[in-house]
Length: 358
Ligand SMILES: [Zn+2]
Ligand SMILES: [Zn+2]
Image 1 (cartoon, protein in one colour):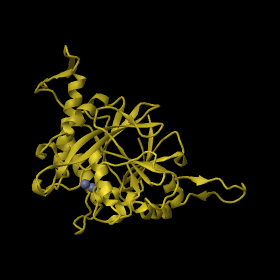
Image 2 (cartoon, rainbow, N blue to C red; image 1 turned 180 degrees about the vertical axis):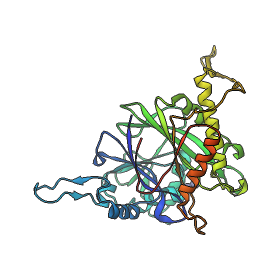
Image 3 (spheres, protein in one colour; image 1 turned 30 degrees about the vertical axis):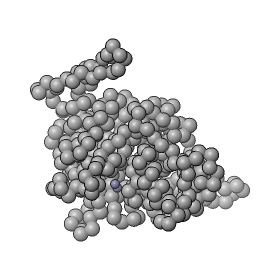
Image 4 (cartoon, rainbow, N blue to C red; image 1 turned 90 degrees about the vertical axis):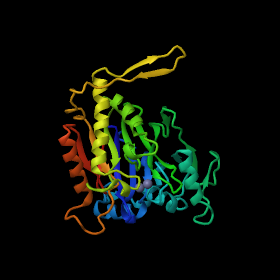
């Protein structure tokens, strides 16, 4: 069942500013003009202007008022004015660039920026009145602010961000800072309330196997419970092609690690199919999870056969090493590795300008 429309404003991992993580999202049963969620905010008005030159009807057209003129495509500014809130995984510039640059120009009511507290504080540091004018506020009722910082808690609960959409937030690791502290990014379970369908969206993320704080397993465990009845679409980064060594990942995934992560998800799915994950309630009411080991003979064959994985955030091929786009190369590499494991998953390269329905 289709629940959401997504238009990809940008999906690259940099450094080119024209194609940075930025997805415009709406419930499929409503028009774009009823409100857009800006899922990440890397590329913005410039990227949209170029996409509309190639495909003027990307967001539909307006019926002419006189009923005799030509249908008129919506303008970049009109489409951007429909953004009602932002959902941000972390505050690296390639994920917040357009939120900052457009903040003072969009007009209309304040827009909420939903993110973890740390991410919001990082964004706030840009609006310092030095790097950029201060256009944000923590006060819900601050009518002078263009952006309202709104904290999402990682409390295993869905939080409504619009009338139709709610989000469950989980922290994931995205490398470390110079003091060897884990840098947090976010994975969101984004749910269409009316249909109860959801998709999983990762911000930048590194392999659990090399993270100081491995937390992607928690995301896979929750996702496995929802596959395939409520969740069958996963957006995850794979910044580098095959062969990128661990010490040069800089908080990102390569195909070897992504296929390993997908096999961990597949293992969790099989455990649930086999009824191996048993949850109980302790006398104090706390949920406990009894560890079960998979039968070593158990195969992961076809465990993710209902799942589509959309590959995002591929780093640009600046040296021109490949003769086709690097996102296609990386997606094909992930598909080959996943096929070798027999997971049955479908791997899709995300392209700028794509209209994805999930
Ligand atoms: Zn990042
Ligand atoms: Zn990034």
